[in-house]
Length: 316
Image 1 (cartoon, rainbow, N blue to C red):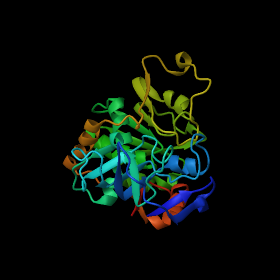
Image 2 (cartoon, rainbow, N blue to C red):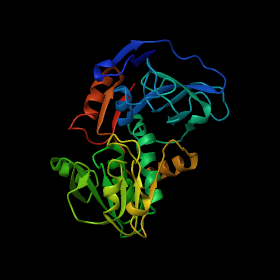
Image 3 (tube, rainbow, N blue to C red):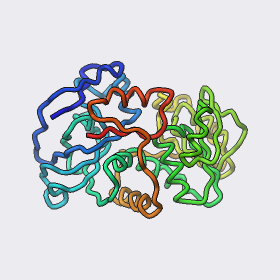
Image 4 (cartoon, one colour):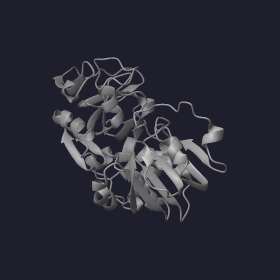
């Protein structure tokens, strides 16, 4: 099969197009023919060598959509079944979806029924599931002012679309490049504020904050909450993995809350509810950019560039 292999960390040039053996099915695992996969910032970090647990060589890719070609769970995962898979250490502890086929534990494969085309379905698993789970945790109510830090990211754009479908809210994006304001508003945001070096350049306050920058900006996000407000730290786009020297008594304002959402905790009912919401509300989940598998380097270059906006998908 054709695959994109990283033999050692580095710049996008380390993504090598290679012919490798198709994985052999083993007990408890099934083989998926990959039709598409989203490309994620975490994969860029791993390619750069910033994921200490990942050993090379490795085929990256933490999510995929496709069909079952060989199954060891024929009742739940019959051959030909449309499935999605994401997280579960795919592309990290074992080879991932940057290939024509991927071998995945059955427990990490989720059968779905959908009319979405492959490019749109490939945008859903990690990105829309993360946004949806985080928004559920924020307990949106009609009239809320929601701030999305990291609004130009794939999850940020997904959050804007989903939030409007879930409640009558006003959604504001943050960006370091105000030149993207028109793009953000076209994607579903109602307003845009600038941030610089982890600080919001506004005194405005919000009822809910979806912080996709993560630990690097959580403390600042907490200072922009209204009473009863909630911050969800659900991303690490800032490149900082943990909160350090964080005193919750001093940093979390009285009557405010800090929570998070981890997309690795996958619930089938949540996936089904998400797909139903997308269908019933006719949410446009079309990725902003698609690339062929043979051009994975270009996908990574785009995602890491200042021009990056929204979800990037690579099709087989």
